Length: 278
Image 1: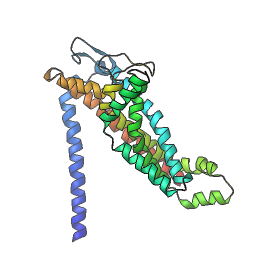
Image 2: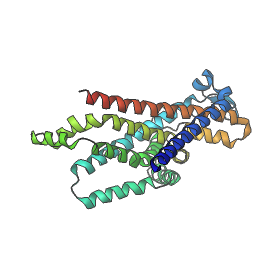
Image 3: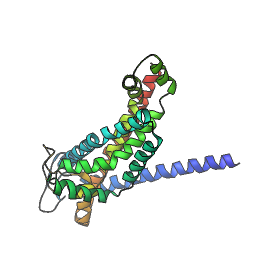
Image 4: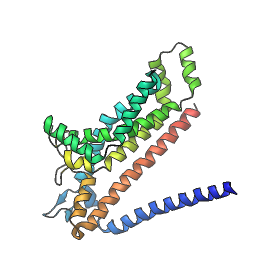
């Protein structure tokens, strides 16, 4: 009886969650469908009032720049830390300390990270409001997010494969390069994409560090850029005059994140299947 109740509770919870997601997407799409067009996706915003004319193309490009910068600055150290903890660290105290640091970073509010980046990177180091400053702030935010998933992926590598490699005389570095990373490539790419989605939706760090209301598509890491989250925030702040455009912008951002998540899941499954089939 308890098993049936637990199963029923799990199914109902899944259906409720799926229904809420579908309702959210449907509602946002219906509200913003009138503003979504080819011009909306390919033109920069124009006019005295933000969102009344033109589109969001520079915001899409800017968000991709911010996300890519954050992944380079945060993803590589995150994977390196996970490799160190799993294959090189032999001190339990050191491992516990590193994991504690990761937990503390993950608990920092994003607006505090934005304020820190503004004070240290924008002002003290003189980088100014630019893609690099914002990307560094976002990198700190997503570093523990990616590290935890990368470490979990490394822990799932069959230990027999690693021990067999060691017994054949292969070095730890060679084992990681030829066995561990290929085996975990799907999960690692998935973790990076999900971390990028997390960064793409963040608004608070961008407000202080690199996102602006009007800007052309960036061509340098030291230039400011538009971003979808900030653009959406400004549109909503203007009230009913830009609300339809705000819904259109929200739907575009949700589609980008959804497609990225789907691609990450499909890639991870494909890599697992390819590895199992040899």
